[in-house]
Length: 406
Length: 95
Image (cartoon, rainbow over all chains, first blue to last red; front, side, top):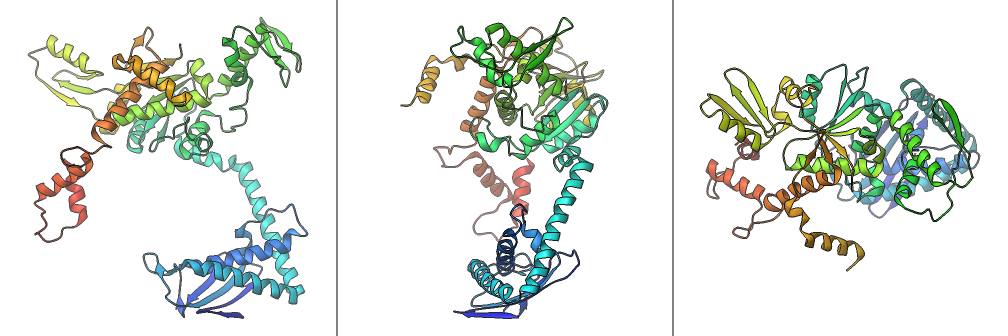
């Protein structure tokens, strides 16, 4: 038990380590009131303890990367503060909210605990061993997770992709509800659906944060470009713009030799030798082929609502693809789906119309027919079978292929 | 001002965008630039016209006006007792 008095501030805490791997065994009090939700005093105590332990351990093990969670495993503690004007937050008001308490608690904890460790070297050593043990266990568990599940990243993928064996097409669908019905209505053998939530970031604006964005990561994972290595730095990205230039003004070399097949013969372009224009063309072509074979899908289809926001989402996604995966466009893999605008129900059949003009033409040709015309405002409005029929069915749907010309 | 805005200005002055329409060439192909231009124009137009800017007549954005209209439909005026917000949300979103 250790105490420190300051102006309207009293901190008392006690802690003990044991062999167990329990977490969150800390009880905390503020002015004798139990704070079950923790709060600023608990987080201050934990970070203070972490700083001290880190200092203690890093001396002997400079390579070990400690995380705050390592310190709290096997820790049993009681933290109690007495302060003026406590404020409580959370729905049940069981969390201390005063901000200044965190800094104070952290400072005093550091002071007191490091003093304690100096006075009781034997105990400090035991605690040190326990924390190192925790850190090693954590690293080991993470490794195992990586091996068995292909890393934390693919966990996301399983969630968003409902697995199909022959992945021929992938749909990026706007909104969760439309994603749900698309998933239900899709052709299970050939179509995969990835539901996007909200708008993707503008790839030309927030260049650094784009690749950290969850949606973008999901897209990349789904496409099979999970390692962003090789995504931006490859021979295609490097040399493609140069093909448009009439004259090469600098000497270009390859960092690694490139092996390719032409007319069933293996040919090699050696590394670190200057390239001529023909070789450059070959390099770009081969890299493109290589990159395309890495992509999991034959067709990448963007499917957004036929409204203004849908148009925006298509713009944002295309910007991202253009900026980061331009070879997909050049390879002719990117498509835009065209959802219907109108559904016309006659006595015999259901028809879908994809633009106002088409509907008008139909109206003039069949002026006297009995029918019900319905305007479709979003993908989520249609149910699964309708969605498949009108926008996803390879035999009936409308699909625009995106290509680049100047 | 600046190299970037000069380009933009030049582009706007040419007024290409006025005739922008999605052109679909043979084999159901669309040009990326055309697609982006048309879609972005549509979105930009929609945002400026009925989302982000206040009307000069009442100083309200469409969403705000929508809420006031819902209040009017429910007959909620300053002299009436209070109503839960959930009711109003329901009314504003329903029709």
